Amino acid sequence: MKSAMKLPLLSCVLVGAALSGLSGCAPLVVGGAVMSGFVATDRRTAGSQLEDEAIELKVASAVRQDLGERVHLNVTSYNRQVLLSGEATAAFDRERAEKLAQSQENVKAVVNDLAVMAPSSLTQRTKDSVTTSQIKAAFIDAKDLQSNSIKVVTERGIVYLMGRVTQREAKRATDIARGVGGVAKVVRVFEDISEEELKRLSQPPMGK
Image (tube, rainbow, N blue to C red; front, side, top):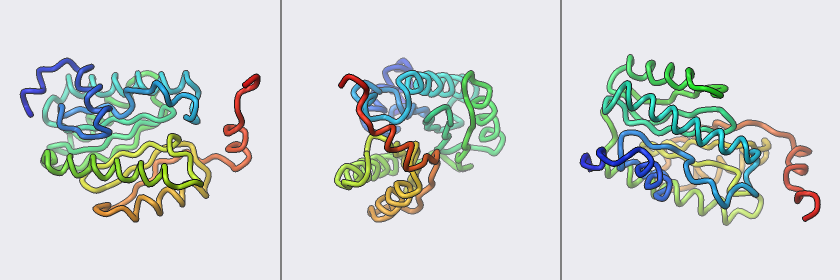
């Protein structure tokens, strides 16, 4: 798969998005590059979604240029909160990746969950991709969740959940994710909203 490193960044981004988290395209994977079709059901504004796309691309590019293959990094931004997941070969590289992310325009906060270890294998990343797909499917089956309002990222069996959700939804999503085979741990990177705000966000736009 190393030959894929010669592909332009955009190609790898699109492949990574299509595979829902399979990060074999390159050491850097952007978590939310393809957004069309989800604007209506996403709890961010359309502007925030585009901003998150730009943040993911800028963070990925900055880390790749500075650290190269020393870091296998997944970058996921939700409402300007950036999650860094994957592996770094040294603690210095882990800290450097965080500083690079924090320095990018419009980044509100950074959650750095990079593990200091050798990059995960392609086999592990394939398993993680399958786990992510299974969790997303389970969210769709759950009638009390809006599946497109929650982002799912999986690294080495660790599942990260991101989104703007109520406490009830956070607990429900966590319980569902924990029930999927192969999940070692669930990390919640949620932004809390009230049930009242959820009702407002769930209302159809005026004139529809």
